[in-house]
Length: 281
Ligand SMILES: Nc1ncnc2c1ncn2[C@@H]1O[C@H](COP(=O)(O)OP(=O)(O)O)[C@@H](O)[C@H]1O
Ligand SMILES: [Mg+2]
Image 1 (cartoon, rainbow, N blue to C red):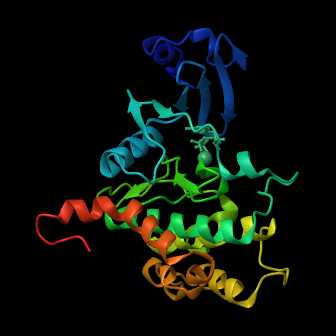
Image 2 (cartoon, helix red, strand yellow):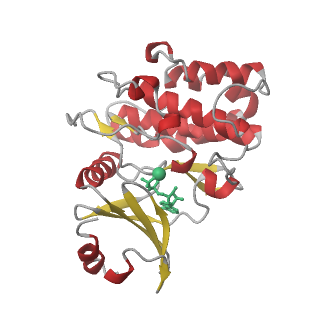
């Protein structure tokens, strides 16, 4: 990983820690094929992410720039061309918080909480898409628990984000089990909002059942039907986020008050941007 030690130095971290696990207040949290994530036990603690490629860091930088101080994301900023700094989320991700099976999948979460999580993720994605930004790596490992008691969630990990302004066609595909068929079969122009919808559908299934594919008949028919509209093999047949948010399942499991609160929370900035032109209703 080039330049990591220099960057560690630049940002006040001891370069000898770059590949070590748990020394001097810096703990290795996660290592993947393209990044290493550390927690620095400062007050408050911070998260450092070191990228293997400048392109991944650049995608993350662009996403932060487009999103600004949006409530639905894990706050952070990029530093230089291969490192980023993030707010430490003390509850971690869905898999950190609710647990993981031996096969890596998230353990099932109770039904009303799952509906709450999916509603929030759809609202957050709606905001992303309204700004011309696709996340392209939605999965339980990238959904963070902000508050488990008054359930609030946010999205993180923007190193596969794709902006419509970016003409770079070399962005890698997301994480295989959550990746849409058009992405895995290398179709042209696979980067659309429908690809994100597919990943939310797979995430939905996993956190409901602890399974990775819709085989078991343990779901109520309305929820199963909703998930199936999200994971249709044909991108153009998948429901859009606007249609999904109107599905009666969300009315069944979330009060009108809760839905309105979440809608205000996660769409407020879209309203603000246009506030001078038209009132936000
Ligand atoms: N801000 C954060 N707060 C707490 N844990 C984090 C934070 N960022 C990352 N992590 C932990 O590190 C893991 C990997 O981080 P992520 O940014 O998703 O990297 P990658 O691109 O390698 O998936 C997450 O799944 C989570 O467990
Ligand atoms: Mg991740």
